[in-house]
Image (cartoon, rainbow, N blue to C red):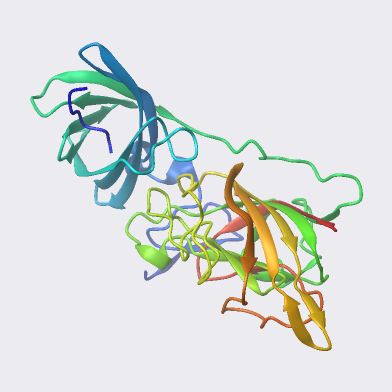
Length: 323
């Protein structure tokens, strides 16, 4: 097949809701996030060269000032057919309403939600269209016998719990109840911070038993390290970076088995299986030690901690089933 491009704080101001304040340059509502947010996202389609064709996926990441990074994949999008060993990066910007992304293998031109792919000779080889994925577990209802920690009505089950934007739970709170081995479902949304980088880009964390952090971060389009979204901080990288774009609702479905202790000594490590947006990212992995940021690894149950990191990360639909 012919080689083609695979497209790849200051002052505090009030947000749309009076109960939530966000730093300048941070957005918590898509309709107010600007034109760069509209361009950012995922694109999918089929490209052809001669008699051959293939599905391609593209993730476009806003960097502020109408500049973008992009990553393209053969086969589809991460967790949905993409060959993660054959990624092609690109960079570009928007001028006069047209976004042009350039890679070593060609060019992508985005206009009105359609991304046209050009090979190195400038020939069109197909078009990708913007797509919005949704987690298959989004809105999953709590089963009979579950402990519903947050359903949008009250944050009373959390110490320092605060309801914002009418029915969402703001990060930086912990449950009053403590749990041993359990299954948990929760949904989270990171803000859009195009000019931020790294750990400043929508940082929070889901601390299982307040001891093991599954990172929450706007890691859309990144490598998938242990300090990025879905990573078990300092322990394990996710099998795939399943992160959706910021301001998109995402899910964690967690199956956690607590460590075993005898005479005050740990004799078996904790284990966890995690699905991020319905995609398996940790398959019954061992947690050899706790992670920094909250409570040390000791015997006995403990609560869920949703880390606050100065970012308006919000949560909803949180429930636990003890095992």
